[in-house]
Structures are given as structure tokens and as C-alpha cells.
Length: 132
Image (tube, rainbow, N blue to C red; front, side):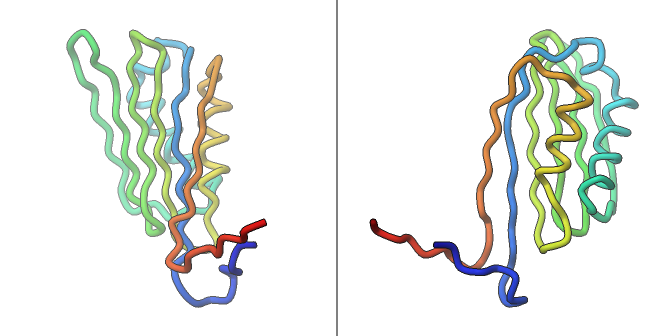
């Protein structure tokens, strides 16, 4: 049975991260489009954008990285167009933002064939373990 984190005490941390497989390669090379996608995902998830940066990398395994610094923490997206592969890392603090909504928004836009998603509670109040 988890401890209630809505009491206003402590840090509520939510971390959603995962991998997207089988995405369209052309889209994974489009820095401008991916920056807009991350910016929109932050809005959808009720995050406050502080700064958005993106880079294109060359070479055989080159791709795009987009990092959004938000008041609540961060969103990070990295692509490998040759492999149709994307990694996402979205972490927020507080009750008002929802990193799962940002993750789902990005998945809807990139249309992966397969998604592996993970969630970690990163709150300052540990959850109690109940032995059954």
C-alpha cells in the first residue's frame, strides 16, 4: 500500500523512460520537427519550459538529440534514424505535471512499431512494502 504523496510534504518525483522501435527514419533526422514535438509534449504534460536545445550528429550512427529543461525537471529524446530507434527520458517533480502524458504524446507522433516503457517513483517519501 503506497504512502499518500498528495499531502504536500516531500518531493513527488515521476520518471518515465523507454525505447521506441520501428519509427520512420526520415522523421528521426528532422531536428526542427523533433524540437517542436518535445516542446508540445511539455505543454501537453503541464510542464513549464525553461530552455529547449537540440543537436544533429553525423556519422554512421548519427541522429538527433533534443533536451528540454523544464521547471519540473527535464525531457530528453535521442534518435538513431538508421535503426528507426528512439530513447525517451522524462522526469518531473510535483503533482501538476504528468510525464506519462508527454511520453504518450511523443509515441503518438512517432508511431513506433514497438514501445518498451518504464516508470520509476522518484519521490522523497518511500513507499511501504506490504508482505502478503
